[in-house]
Image 1 (tube, rainbow, N blue to C red):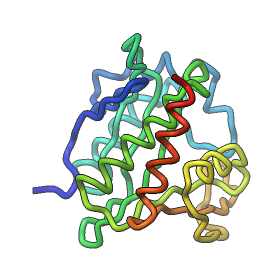
Image 2: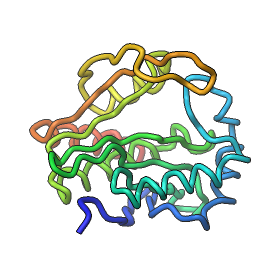
Image 3: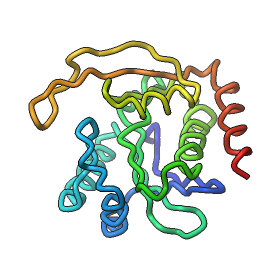
Image 4: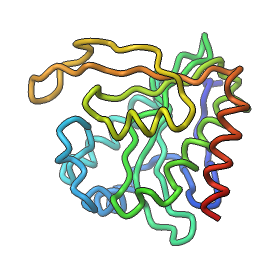
Length: 197
């Protein structure tokens, strides 16, 4: 049995459901809201590349290294983005939460915070992970601040970690939450969500 199997995670603001090809049109609409692919330091798919991105994520799921989700606004049912468990290390019970993007309309609505709460809860309390990583481009200051606000600690910087599509080199900032930190991180995330109610 795979370490991480497809599962639907439901919250007050967002529902995370297993990614499928049937989500294509909703994901195209979501990514067009804000033209997120134009942020050079991210790797958000363009509308015309969405089918290939869905296929890529599902192929990695078949190989056991990724578990991709589609995010829906819980109230409207509208698709608002994507997120994943990636770089799954079943032997060591570690994984990364990443390849996440959300439509502009969904930003600062509580959906991203709750997505992280749902994903971290499942990782630590169901999959019994010892650590969960987050990685982002050094230049993505918004993402770095958001990850730190989750309660993750910065582990370090992988310099010249990846070559991007335009040929530039990416320095990757690595953060993590370890199992012993999870209760406090969970409390912090719940407190942030409670303030929205």
